[in-house]
Image (cartoon, rainbow, N blue to C red; front, side, top):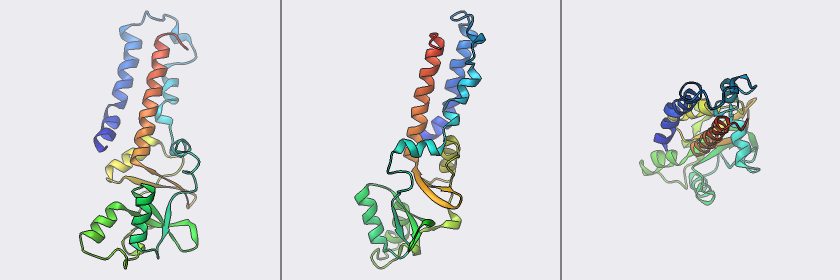
Length: 203
């Protein structure tokens, strides 16, 4: 997954620029008047994957993604938190203070469980989530307006797989590296379709 992310980050623009170069230089006679049209290569870029935001990713995830993320409290046992992750097939839970679902206290991940419970031989049933979570002041977060490519860079640079989405100090969702990669793949496909249609005179 990390290799796929790096490949998109490094080679995404290369692929696009190569196609645009082919339009401008290699085969300029395909559509002699195309540069007089309103849709230029620059305007195509504005509607490409560079403009996709985390808000778009949350919308694409569906009804349950925005504002109804999976969570636990600081007082829950690590055992119950891991059980919830297993039941819902997720790798992380948002941690909130008891009675304050909109106020994020931190995040607990499978990695926290392995490194802070299993490796040290601690009991997951007697250890509270608040004792091993990554605290709010150490969290790396994004906003709904953050560009997907920026979020991807944050996640790869910091080697994290889940990132909370915060809007005006309130939690509005959570995205994973899988969500981000799927969004980039989808936009790459859409952009290639647009470029192909442009070359063929579909615009």
